[in-house]
Length: 269
Length: 282
Image (cartoon, rainbow over all chains, first blue to last red; front, side, top):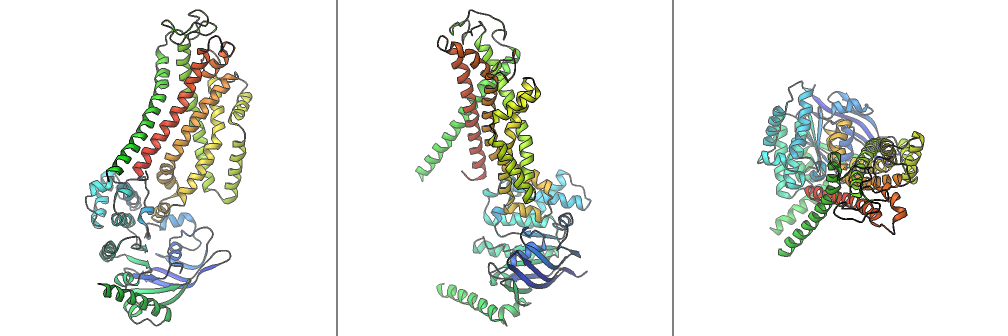
């Protein structure tokens, strides 16, 4: 099976408002796919829909096939099995995405333990600790023994996001969704996280759905991109084509704006 | 910079004073109650001295109108107050936390119904609910008093738990936990309970104070633990007739009650400050 995710004719709507309509795309195994759009374009809702975590007020119709299983309309019990196993998400704001009262080590250990049990492997305390250490190594977190006992507010934003990535990877998902993972970070940290995500996804051979409003960041990560606006697809194609020779006027304006921004920075420097 | 450090240190020490004062005010009755199991100055119901003796060497806290030692009664009363307070809070918390979390997870309709039910029960004075429970059991005993007050406290705990749980449920880390496949029971156990506990704990301490006061009121009315148990409320009631000639008989149990309730609140406040500074909020 070459296809990890297929979205067909996805429509998300509340009682009185259509939020996403007619959205279709596919992701194959090991592919890095970028979803570009301004805030409110429906990109984060799409990612929630893929994991079956939409708020109750939003109804989904259409098809989302994740690792061969249908997500839209699936009962919660099936979804719990799918989450972690097939898909994991890294969110925008790592401070609120981590439990403030739980040491970082335990936050990573919980998905590790569930995965070991799911795979039928021994899940004793030393097994789990060893796995947590490996993961912290993988996301290049320094001083694992100290960080394991630290609480989220005691470490930096970049380290928190690395912990969040370690938690997502702990599940060994087939698809990793990164929902604006760099937006809450400063620019140098952004670059580190982007490089990290890219190399991890390549090394582990998992697919990446990278969601961002930042064309430059998406350009560094994704092979294929899709531009969204007001819940509709505007343009899709290989990243270098869409980002350098956009056909649609909206994408053109986005690219031009980014270019002007870069030029302004260059001029300043 | 120096000022900042000084202010931080002063705020820190003020919090520590709260915590320590609370610990002492709770610790003294706790110790007295524990000691009363193995030793009291005199036997509880024996008439060991003259009637209404003023506090002195033989009877540190004086004697009551039957010539019983008041210090002995205070010690046993401390035991009763703590047992009733802890028992009532435990029962109230067990029922309240469970119902509160259930309500927060329930469908909209069931949630509204439970919330309204809590509100109606809260509108009844705790003491009245407790008296109704004692009435249905048709006998006053320590166990009945604990059960009655526990049931009286449950809706208050339930309402607070419901609100706190809803707050936590709206947090990103709950979505983050769900997205990596954590089941609801695990989320309740590992994320919701620890995160509502600091706030709930402070409230439970308030409820403990309420329960101790309510137990005193029940005993005052003769619906609490029957003799030979001594209870501060019962002592107050017995001293009522002699409050002008022998004020210590009423003042001392009143002070004990006051100190314990204040102490528990200070202790809870101090502990909450500790927790929130650990969280990085202070």
